Image (cartoon, rainbow, N blue to C red):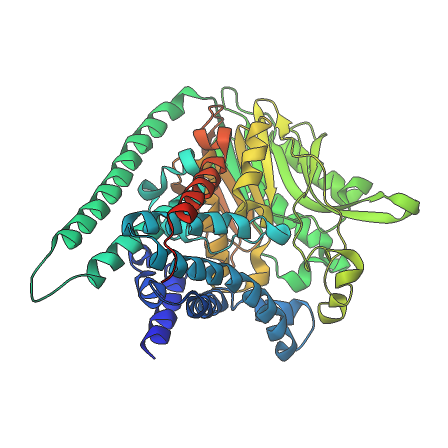
Length: 524
């Protein structure tokens, strides 16, 4: 019973690292019970233990998906739970695989430190695999537990979030190894002291690098051109925003809030002539903020263009769009549009990484049956260009909703020239749960990885402006109409992570795993 209790405890503690709890200090010890349950165990048993851990962790972290699918998919909760259960069972495969391999290596390798390092790297690589395989779902990566403390994840500009997860797992291993081999009767032995010293060195080195980089990035920021920025949070109920009779009301809300933001950013603003000497203005509205086909023009589209002219700034907003596909079939896109200060369409971006079973059904006929379970599943088509949207000096790399949880997508935008990142999303689906906060915290990592300012506009929150150090400089609350404003800098520097991505982590994992195979002892 003790191993199962330790497994359940680790699963609960890992969930507690994330919103709404945000118990980030536990990141150093949340996996210690799991190590106790799988280390030097039979790998078959460890596999089962890791799978149970995954069920507990992902089941408790993603519980909000069931009521979301039930409410907006128009199916009873009892039918939604099995759908989420399938996802949780799939996600649990990754910690199960990790646990099985960890148990095998712990019984075959003589050097415990080497074994611990390999399994830590393996955890980070499996998180990367989870973010890539079958479209990817890296939600709940261990590194994101550090989001409330930017000083602790500044090294994301070198090796990204998955390597930080690996470092946290190695710290957990060192603490487990120290406690597991401690002999109270004999006092503190060399292994215990050595492990604690290693933990202190890792934590001290991480914090020191964080302080140095935090100061360096903050100090260099004024050297880059600035713009005024605003994220507008309309806070429109999901059930109401698509009603045809309320479209004008929706546009009016965003017009009013945008004018308020312009006045806040420029006290001399009168809505007629742009005050001289002020930097450019970029206003961001959320995903599908305009619930009509902007491309068709008309009164509502003209109102958006007029608002851009009135505030003498560009407006970047979400809207549905369509085109003619093969066989003259109409295809739909989740689109971001940029209207410049003259009311002209300056560019568009179509969401490239769609939500499987939400915005499209993957694998064609193989999953067509799912439409009976989730009738609200959309039929969108993915875009094919990650080029930034440009306005004067601004080159905005756009990430729509789900895309912001993928480090590689933000990296691709910056490689193509983005000097700031814009996240537009509609998290009203998640209700008043930890999900909107979990989603928002990942954007702080995108800021540090690429050293870019991030403007995040969410329909019902959380809307925020994040500096390249990962510091949230302005933030809204949930479910209220709000304005988030500030001044951002258009940086064009390149980070190590931008240049090499996750290749070093994956290569190191492969090399050390191969070495482990060579060093592994045969069972007696």
